Amino acid sequence: MVKSLLYTGPALDDLHEQYAKKGRIDERAAVRARCEVAIDAPVETVWDVLATPAAWSRIEPAIHDVRLDGAVEPDTSFSWVNGKAKIQSRFAVVRRDEELTWTGVSSGARAVHRHLLLRRADGGTDLEVSESMAGPLLGLFFGEAKLQAALTSWTAGIKRAAEDVGRGIAS
Picture 1 (spheres, rainbow, N blue to C red):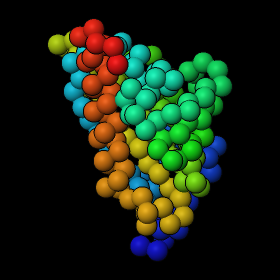
Picture 2: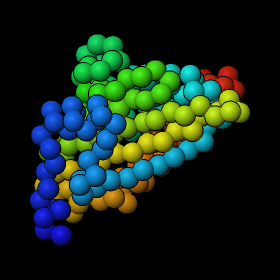
Picture 3: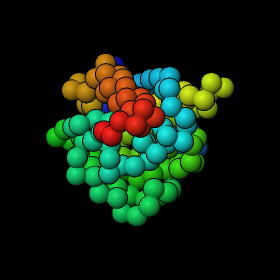
Picture 4: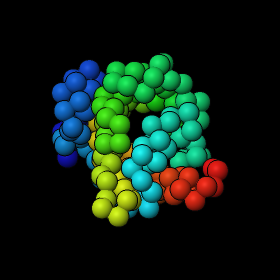
């Protein structure tokens, strides 16, 4: 128990290169969660919602002050605020209509956030999201239940935004 509370995870560059870019989260991290959602919108629409960081507030209203240092492509840095948490991130995998993954750091915690978009035969999209977070004592104030709730809200927001676009509703 103490060992997992003190686990800081790999260095951020290693987390980015050896985990995120290779389709992995940190399975040793004290805080991990996964979420799946079926979205009644084409994968291209879901991608457009997800790959537009400046509009993430339509997914999650607590997100603001998104600053992108270039295009949405591997190794592009971006910063954003989610609630009160200031996050410095970098895209690791950007495969249009397939995967969007980034790494980030906030208050000493290091994270991998991975999104897989799967095209369904009926024209919809299955979205699989996984995240790991590691940092000293992180599990004491931000545990798996909180991360699971955050991912559930995030995926529900993506679903709502993508389906609204499909219905012609501006969000």
